[in-house]
Length: 260
Image (cartoon, rainbow, N blue to C red; front, side, top):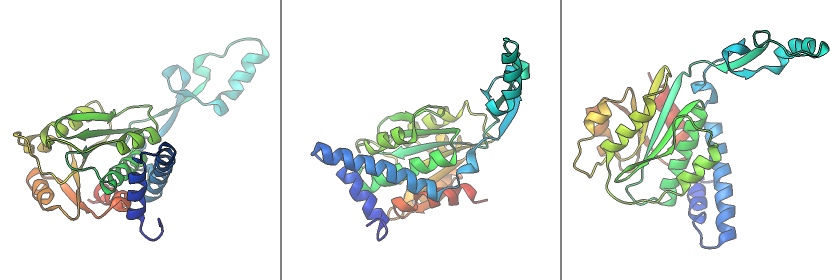
């Protein structure tokens, strides 16, 4: 089924992950997680958002490079001593190129197709910006699923997204402000808010000021309902791309990020 129609297959799995039968629900959710992460990995160039790995003296911090530190460790062990930190070599990541904050609109009905698209986009962001990426969901209020820097695994974050339920008002302005708060502490060369929404705000706050405050705003809008998103992107100075289905999410993200 995945080969014949990836969107329908993933939507079905996501719907099955809400089954009342406990064993079926657990099996479907486990398979959905693994499938979503794998599809995202194959659809996105992993190296794009990664900082460069640098080697330096261990007294300046970082993770010990055992291979390069081995001579100093052996010499110290031979005389029953402890090597000096400045004789050891450490590895540390330099400033990342990209920090991403994904903002997921949950104000409508979160069907299997919508949840699959949100989960695929989440996984794609984690591959594209593995050092710094945040995930925020919003309806009436904005909730942080994954902070910008977190030890939560890809599987745990995808699991949280698959558990989202649709409800309430579309507080787009509050969601964009929350995204900017997440990115504020980043030292990345590029800070990007990725909005997954039809951009139809239904509260009494104008979202344009918050949108224009984003260093870079990209929008993925459902292909069958994208007129408002196109208008909002034009008014906010953002770039947007129609999302035809869940399986298209990794490629759509790459198109937006790589477009000049």
